Image (cartoon, helix red, strand yellow):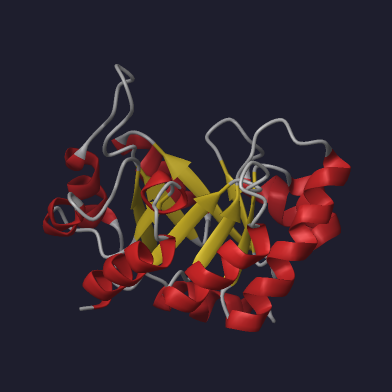
Length: 212
């Protein structure tokens, strides 16, 4: 896929899933097949502390399954891993490489995204040339601070029409409507799907409501 093709798919994307390697469950490929068939548009391998070789091997599995479903595969944080694995997407945190540096490493065919946690970070992301950005966490576990729905509303007011951005953090079937009402049309999910008894059913409901 060319960069232009990936960006077209990104603009049509509504549901972005972050998942680990499913080592405990031992069902990675089966899980990916199920959630992608059910409506996930972008899937990110997100597991801190992986050795580079292990992440490269896992990336091969993610890449094969996402290509079968016409979805996008995202690597988290690691531009060096992305250079080797050539995913569709590299997602950067606030403390990761600057976007121009990541572009210099990967070229224009890899889509680049950035997490944002405050209004000024949203403004910086919009000015930096990222292909998409995420805002949140909307809800955070335990006592961790979260910018909440206010940041979603801020992003909705600042982002140009047609640009790709996602709300993230604690989103599930019970609170999705509040996120949509705040202005989001795309969301990132993780535990709502990865810890579900029936991940595909949860994905079908989320994707259907986002596209409805």
